[in-house]
Image (tube, one colour):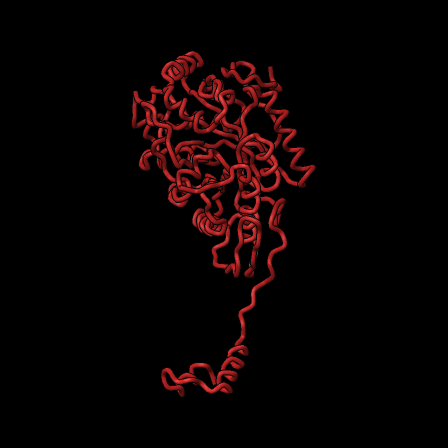
Length: 418
């Protein structure tokens, strides 16, 4: 007998006998209840179920294409207006997809796009247009074969980690294990303001810690679970595939050099995006080694470095220098000021930010690194010009420029060769 049977014998509006109500309630409590696993005990890092993923590449130096998906790329200079299609608007899909496809064929190892919620205006409209990094990844999977394809997610957007875990599992499946995620705990306070959210900026790394831990649970567990953290709570989490193809999970990146960023990356990520302190590679080498030791000593984890290098490429060092000088002379000061004003509130942190590094010219073509040589020699002429690339080394090594060449950069490095 069920409650439906009891109601069928009762005229509408009629009062049920007390003994019949008791019987109905008793029978309903006997119905089986679906059981879920206990809450997961771990809600903060370090947390690496199954270990950390590796990059399968024959190259000692991994080379990637960075910032290809936003108007003007990394160049806040009016020089991009000389050929808008080639230098400002190459983010548009027909040209951008061809650019990334060419990088794949040339032997690049990964692409890392920007993720923007607002631009910086100026005469050039710096970053006023950009392809969304999350939804572009599966499209790139259809035009590339080997590149690792990264998306970015900002904690200030208040996306739920299960959404990103689900998207990521699907993207990694579609790309056959080539998807990765760049986690941005906080690029700018304005990120949250743009979508009307009130976020305590000081908590960004704590929120990111829980975010990634829950995401890793979803990627690794094969049975339903519950998660109860301080910032994220998920009950009766179902296990709908696909799970990531790359095992044990996709590669995770974090950027910045602050103590909070380094600690978060040491707990959870595989690569840390950083720049040379004071533009001195000797300081960068010290920072890299100190960070690696920190991750290994405190959390027992491996952390590799991802370094941005601004490349002005030309046939000779002299022509590369000339092109660089043109870029600097035509800096869009309005766009540059907007970048530093929205990114940093303190004037001292804005100083000299917008001056790009000196060019790396033809020396890169004759580098002993097969990755760099293949990159520069194979780059399509229709996409040549100023761009940015990044590298993740598998061991702490300096550049290996040929003794017969000159590396035209204001970064001072301690190379093993003269």
